[in-house]
Amino acid sequence: MADLETRELEYFVTVAEELHFGRAASRLAIAQPTLSKAIRRLESGLGVQLLERSSRHVTLTPAGKALLHHGRNALNAVSAAVEKTRRAGDRHARLRLVVKPSGEADLLLGILAAYSRRPDARQVDIVFGGATDRADYVRDGRADVALLYAPFDDLSGLDHETLSVEGRVAILPRNHRLASRSELTVADLRHETLPRWKGVDWTGTPEGADGPEITDVTQMVQLIQLGRTIAVLPYSLAQPVHPALVYIPVVDAPSSRLVVAWSQTDRRPLVAAFIQAALEASGAPLDAAAEA
Image 1 (cartoon, rainbow, N blue to C red):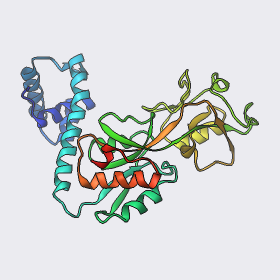
Image 2: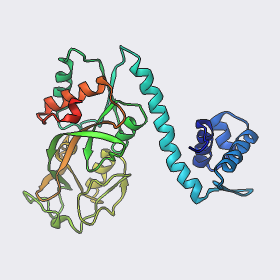
Image 3: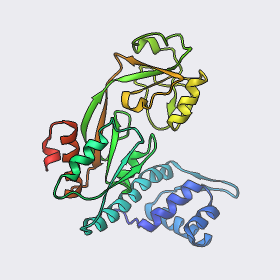
Image 4: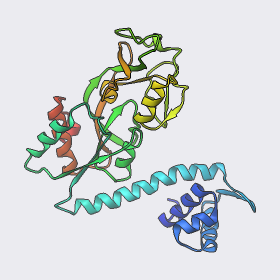
């Protein structure tokens, strides 16, 4: 195993994010010469050059880009391990659930009620995440479980169970040429402009999305009203209905699944109990993974 300390990795990731030794040193609250020596020591130990330095610029080498990607994941894993270890020893630890506001297919109240009836239930803290970052909350330990949408959310590093399956709906301005239709197909939307959700494919269409990049539903609604884009979302994520827009089922769009997700390395009874309650409340079948 390579000799790589967590502190050295944190130093490198900070420099790689800032691409400036002065700003990185300030973030880390250490002296710049100390940081420079640590990076040189890291490069020497790994036997590769991580950064290209000049008097004006700092850039990543291919090896540096690889270490930035894997280093972030490693630091998240360490942080999550520390947090989960502490919480495992806390008999009064609460369970933290991350959801998107209105993004739980009306199942959340039933899930919480089912969980509260369990003799081993803990208090559940609800954490509201954004459109694209909820899985990260679980991966880095900020949350224990999440309600996510497959195949849209990145489920890498997570185990998950399906709670519900639903179709998708096209969201159009009222003056759109297709607004009077009772249903649509993917082919009907082939030449429409679809938004690009940062890091996520919400479209479900063969051609993907080539429209404006958006990060939340408020931006999406405004752009649809202006006629700049349309959207195709799972039914539950299209709520609440906006009076200036129309919502039409896309009958042949791939189905989406609401899932309860947790870390692949998390086998705490606290988490297993919540997963079982979620499956019971949704009417989904319990399987061996949830019962373990």
